[in-house]
Structure formats: C-alpha cells, structure tokens
Amino acid sequence: MTLLWLAFALLLLPAAWLLILPLRRAASLEQRQRELEANDDAAAQNVAVYRRRLASLEAARSRGDIDATRFDEDVSELKRALLDDTERLKRAPLKSAGSGKLAIPVVLLLVSVTSVVWYQREGAEGDLVLYHTIEEVRNDPAASLALMLERLEAQAERQPDNPRVWQTLYPLYRDSGAYREAGQAIERVLALEGRSPWWLGELAKMEYFTNEGRLNERILALSREASREAPNLPSAMWFLGVAAFQQDDYQAALGYWRRGLSAADGSPLQEAMRQGVAQAEQRLAPAGQHAIRIHLSLAQALKSDRLPPSTTVFVVARDSDGKLPPLAIQRLTLAELPASITLDAGDAMSPMASLEDVDQVRLLARVSPSGQAQPQPGDLMGQREGVAVGASDQDPVTLVIDQVIE
Image (cartoon, rainbow, N blue to C red):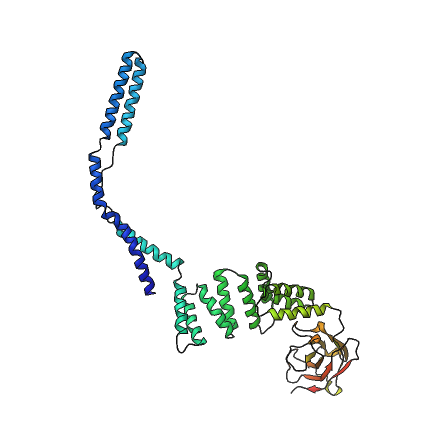
C-alpha cells in the first residue's frame, strides 16, 4: 500500500505544477497589460468619430438636407452612442501579480483530499490488499487450506463490505465441506451485490448439503427465485425437477431437467439430469414391466400387544450390492399386516435409482416403533436376497418379518 500512496503523490505533482505555472507568468502578464492600457487610445478614437459625425450633421443642416428637429434627434443619438462606448471602455483596476497565491495551496489541498476520499469510496484498495494476502499465503512454504482460510477470514473481519472477500472465501468453504459457512459467505455476496441467479443457485446447493441431501422449502424457494431471472439455470432446474419427481409429477420433472440440460454444458449436474430425464421418461412409459409383488406378514412369535396397530412398517427394495439409494419404498402400518403390495418404478425415492435399473433386488421389511427411517435397536425385521424384478402380474414373493434388531 505504501507504493500505491507514493504513486498517488507522484501523480499529484503534475497537477501542482499546472496550478503554479500561471503564477510564474503573472508578473510579465501584468506588465504587458499595464502597457496595453497605458497606450490604449480607444477613447480618443471614439471622440474623433463623434466630432466627424457631428460636423457632417451640421453640414447637412446648413444645406437644408435635414430640418432642426431631425438634427437635434440625430445629435442626441450620437451623444448616447458616445456615452455607451465610453462606459464600455471603463476597466477594473489591475490586481498585483502576487494576488491569488494563497489559493494555490488551498486548491492543492482540496485536490489531494478529494482524490483520497474518491479512491476510498470508489477505488479497489481492499481488492489490492486481498490480492497481496492470497499471494503471501501461496508463496508461504507452510501454505495450506487452513492458513488461507485463516488469512481470508481476517480480511473478512477488516473489510466485511467487500464482496470479493466473500466470493473468494466461498469455494474454500465449499471444497473443505464447511457448507454452512459457504452458505453464509454467499448470503453476504447477495446482500452486497444483489440477488444474482447464479449465486442463488449456489446457495440452494449449500442448503441442500447442509440439510444432509434432503430438499426443504428454502431450497425450492431459492430455486424458484433464481429461475425467474435465469429460466434454465442448471442448479435450480435440478432441485425443482427432483421436487416434481418426488410428487410423481414426472412430466414437470422432465421439463425442468430438459431446460437445465440446455444450459448445463460442463456443469457437474449434467450427468445427473440426463439420468433424471431417462427415469422420468420411463415413469411416463406404460407401467408394470418393472415390479415386485410381495406378500408381507409378521411371524407369529413376534406378535405382541406392546406394539400399537399404528406402528410404522417400512418395505424397501435395494440393489444387491448396496451401492445405490433405495430403489423403491412403501410405508404401511402394523394393523395392515398381513398385506399384499406391489413395488414398482413409481415407488422410487430418487430419479437416480429405481427398479428399472436392476434385475434383482434385496427386499427388507422393518417394523419401526420410533417411525424413523434409520434402523433402531428393538425394531423387527425381515429380508430376502436375490428377488427377481419382473412384470406386475408375476407371482408374489413371500416376505416374513421374523427378526429383532439388536
């Protein structure tokens, strides 16, 4: 920063020289002006012109070319003209060559102060400090992500109204898994620079990660707001498509993802949206080709009055390798057992995985007194491996809940 202010000082030197230059020439200019005024004979010339015109009027009257009345009028007009010319020749007294010297330091001070204030308001001093901070960390032998975050967070405290600081912090937070802090950095950018659609989409993603991969109303609200300014924004289209898919509105999901793909060149969401489009198209195709019919019951040995009839029962189909999200899920109550149900593509939790993606599944049924999706000690469970996925008219698979989770 010292070099910057030295540069400013050097730039002010030419301005000072331009202000002082007229004063250096003031003495010679004053002398010439005095000589000009001393030798000015404009008044004498005006009087001579007046006398010639007056003599001409008198001669005209003597010849009888004008009468006495006209002569008096022309003489009066001539006198007024002479007075006007004489009045215009009056000059204000010349000031001395040294007058105005005091204005020079005042103007210099005003120029300097105005320059500094303008730069502090409109300049990029904070960006320059930020650049030097980043370069210092990069050139530090002990450079690390933690050190960079520490230095940039210090800059955020010193210049909280500089959006460049928060824009620089955001990817560092994101890549280090600090999604909540990344979201807070985006919110500062939005507050300082306006609600840019791209930043709104990034904020929706950070909210999604903070919420452990579950959609909520805030994510959808941010996506809708971003889509009003950027109708094909990939991040917004992805979340709106997932929400529509989860509500079984496959046509709407298809529309969102296709719009997102039109602008998703190079986006990390591109492949996910392609898979989503394929899943939505499959849901819109004639149903019944990828389904499992199940006859579900509770083993007699596990029946007990201690579990109320409203106890939740989950039935889940998973891929045999356990690498994909649940392919299909239904929720029942203990009162409905025994029950015959059918799992199909419409029971998928995510467009990323469904029964249409596999030939065999592992079936699990779990009685959950807590109602939680995650297994808890004391839950009752039953499972079957290697169950084939076929048409909806296939013979039902028997699934018995006959175990207790320890």
